[in-house]
Image (cartoon, rainbow over all chains, first blue to last red):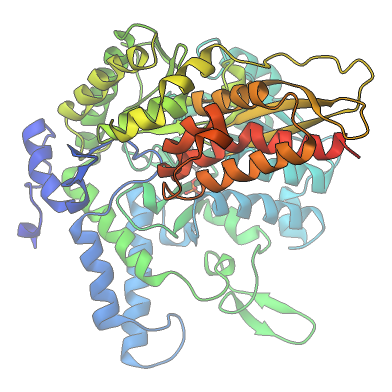
Length: 433
Length: 151
Ligand SMILES: Cc1ncc(COP(=O)(O)O)c(C=O)c1O
């Protein structure tokens, strides 16, 4: 049904088109503190269009059942819906169905790798899993700008195995220092984990460079794709990463769900992480055999309605076209960067205005704490994120403890950006500066 | 006055810039203790020292601190540093209790300016639940440090 969308397929996004598609997002059509809401916090979480909410409701109204068990009709329908959803989300990133593991969020996806590798290091998974084993002297490398979700699992893995966790430092503007990366990554590096798009700065990583670096030393390349998959075309095969993690709630779908992409031959060889029902074939009182990937990693009852909803969100994004999404957000990002740079006493963090960035901008307001900035903006109905955005090491490297971040999505207009900039212009004056 | 102007009363804005007690002071052998408080949601942080007199019923001699945070947390620490000297540890505890009660009342408790002094200016914070922790940051540090210093 094509007429269920508010704009025609493959529409170039403009203010007009965005205003039309906002009809699908009733949450945006409200007043907050007596002002029309300006939602610029999609980097934290995004909103669900009606199509997605309807898909989840319909699943519960007509198809709800346990999947992968039972022979009755509803169980078969639920299983079909669940596996169709997997195929949809997998193909969205250029992966095959057997290469996408459902998780509770991107954080769990990254933990899955770290715990599975840890299990392999303790001998689980036998000969095939030896390639994942880490020991003393081995290195895990990440970067200083990562989200905590792409740091702490590696800290724990290092502690469990005796491996060393190292990081690639940043250049002055907070972006990855690629020259330094060539020295940090060595023959002993087994894992190179990095983000595709910085969730704070909006800087876009040269994935190609990083993957080549990993290949040169035989390390696994792990991509945190949380801030890229929702916003730009991503093809994991073209990027040639070994693993990628992302979350549904950042791409128009409900919370509670994420996914891990892994090359099939790797997922097949990796030991399980969470264990229990559904992920097994044969169980005795002393041992169990595991299902093939990806089911091997999906212990217990799964999030079926969220998977159905997520697939609908993917169709929504595909209807617009990811090239169009990316083009519009690049415009919004450029407008944000330019706008904040023009406000006195405001410093744009990350790539300078005029250079490539995602649809977000983080700033430091001279003399006003981000918490106070966010409070003032909220009274004008403008929702931004303040704090360390789960990236304390990055903020430390920038010489600050927290920042203010505006992040846009398909449903933001240039008016939203302008209202944010205008309000920002009044912040320092309000605090007597 | 708008809710925002109630939150950011002039007294608060002034204290956030001219901060009493900022900069840790040596206790010069008097009973003292340090306490560190951290708000993980926003990264606000304070390291606060309470120094007591060495009388049989000790009084607060000085509160000094270093911190990094929003105007609310910094101003609240400043106000307390101004008010606390001369109080017995029991009086300090009672002040902290009253302050906490006011902040947690969601705006239902009218502050008693007789008791709370400049701290009454934080009454507007009570309507912004997310900011209560900010206002309490230095006060919790002082509460903990005073208990320890009195041991
Ligand atoms: C770059 C990045 N990595 C990881 C995460 C963690 O995502 P989630 O909290 O959905 O697991 C986020 C989201 O905040 C993110 O932006």
